[in-house]
Image 1 (cartoon, helix red, strand yellow):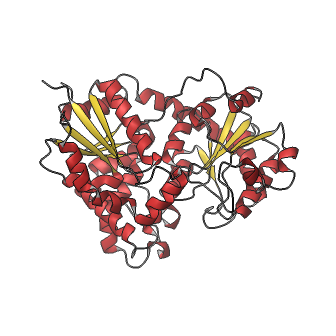
Image 2 (image 1 turned 180 degrees about the vertical axis):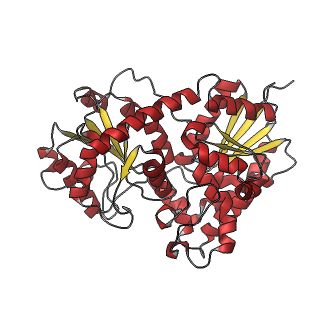
Length: 444
């Protein structure tokens, strides 16, 4: 008899491929099953990750994945060992319609959190009952059993209801309940109330219909680095919990004005910092990896004045290893869910700086529900955040004397412990994955 085999399909972009790979690793290591990762490409290997993000957004990733359905069907048919289970991500729900390929069960993997899942599956209802644009609503929209969603939590695909991407998002909300169930990258102790609503609230469960399996946190593991690079060597020289790590993700570029204000704010804070800096979107010429071009976007003399206190890097940085380092005391982050989980599992408090996608939701949840973050007074996508506010946020999260900061740090440490317990043998996420595997007959 063939060994149980799961097929995980990843949408274009590293932001989708990495969660798919990590899910595959977890299925293989915990359940001892064969896993195949089918990665859908953007069509050009010469694009940078940032360019891929913008190109996919322009075309509409959901639309692209819908068009790829025949090719994916052919790819599955051609596989020598037929998968018994197919897992698609949120952008690939159109693939649930594939038939005649021998797959007996189809699941959706949500690499984000339970509140995001609740919004997506309830979006077809909101689409019918809400009049006008969501950005113009006076009262936050209610999702049964969950935190309401207001203008500051909208997905960017919800900003224009006439846009094709919005229609595709609604369609995904209709398609997710057509699966056999949903895997979501969170854990019971983190989002128990929202998970309960998805399972038990009559109104929400009526649209959800299928079981939800919280199997998080699934994050990248620390890589054994035989020779420490210059970034880690610099961190080795810093005091414990004294450095704020600043990184806004692979697609997180700022305007020139915002870059300047962020730089002034870091300097004004007087705190040590490690800044992974990308070329501002309004700066012409040069590549994002060109040190001279990037440094030209900083205040005159900034690098000289902050030498020894701060480190600005323009190349790839080992984020998981950085967040694991004893010197990191805070993370100024765009709040992409993968980065959030990497921070939560290391007990690092967050300065929330959301830019796009579901990051606005994430920032609200981190600050108002979980209590591991502070956020800017306005959405950074709507207004330039001034240097004084940047300095204040950094000091609150790093300086030990700040009362709010101490409370956030204590909660961050608590969440780190719960994330570890979730994946111990018999922990909530371990048990949930085993329950899912038994339902799929991947294990006995």
